[in-house]
Length: 339
Image (cartoon, rainbow, N blue to C red; front, side, top):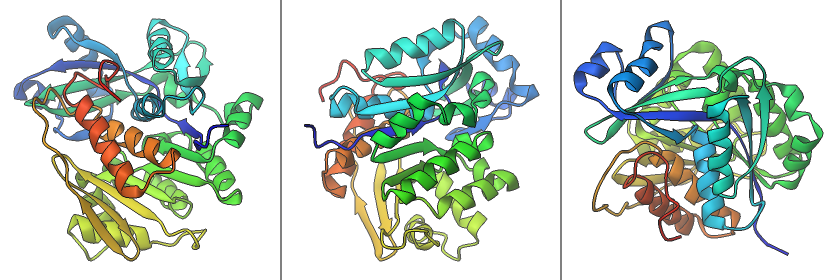
């Protein structure tokens, strides 16, 4: 029997619509690089604009699904990772299904009628990326699906849980359902801080704060760390100080100290606990194509290490490797690389 701990993931399954754009394009839609936002009315034309003028690539995306696919690729055991989220009954939904299947990921999609599968505009400029998500079907996910027999079975079988913070905008009920199950059964609950707006918009921050007490591991990047520091009112302003302070926040299961992992692109990754922080250097890559999916891929590799019982340091190095593979390709693609 495999000693691998199973991972259950919940996220917004989105099809990435990725293209290289100039600064004028970013300005036209009022977006910043190294940021992720939810599409408002003014952003909707971006998808048509890309399709008509920029020959975009259509790539399976969604932050959590990316991480789930990478973790499954690394662990390479059938059924190691299961993913749920809502998609529409359309061509884009089929594309997401086949991408997941090709990577051996087990999916339990909540398929919703009359709403298109969600998309994410990935605007690449000088190797950095800006994300605009049109959630569509993904925000129609329901707690009833979480409570359905196949999903409950997958939750019971898993020892680790992961979701990007993004799902808090529509499914805090499912996040808390999983968080409480994880706590009651002494499992490992992991969330990603995902984007600064989750800490800047009061109802989203309130939902994150409620979940935070159940989180055993938190993963994020340097721009999210700054938003965390501001939102929680930390006196620390350096990334390491913020990470340690975030690890020290109240926790339901105090016997398991919280770990906060902050990636900083090419700079070192910081792993903090309430006792302090360790820095892990990142190896430079030969050719950078785009950073889309880099953080997601880091998470997938990092979780794969933990699932297989590796040390934190070895797991971080696995995450650095998987991120290095993905940033040398468009979007979150890796199938042609060595494990």
